[in-house]
Image 1 (cartoon, rainbow, N blue to C red):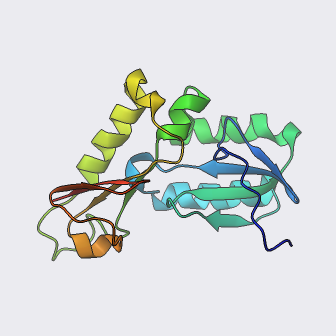
Image 2 (cartoon, helix red, strand yellow):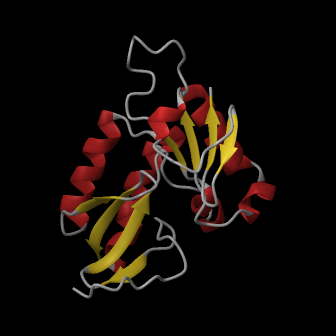
Image 3 (tube, one colour):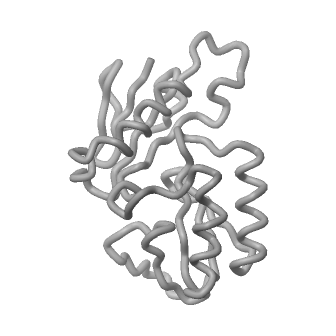
Length: 170
């Protein structure tokens, strides 16, 4: 393994995979910033059956299935479509990067659930073609408090942005 990272210029997706040393990489983006347990289990099964069984967690809270081959991509896409993870095109897929705190909506001590906001942002990124002009390496963060973000570049509330992320802090 080379210590220098070879940046390819795009983020791999289901519709636009990227070749690597162990086969194709397919990045799966969660809807509304989170995978359900059912979806996570299905992704683990798909990684084992169609790839090499390895799954990476990315910096933007996506999962990457590794070691896929070109001939297995149609089956992967067929399996991901009913889970709501297959976008209509690569442009939509590329801009849909919504993140939220792992326990969002699950912690009873939290007075506000940000999951509906994350889903609304995800829906807007999917449906509004004007937003497809955003850079591929963008990110949207929804969380209850700034300290959950751990992003030092966020200075203003309730809306902040860094060079690669926009945060809606409520």
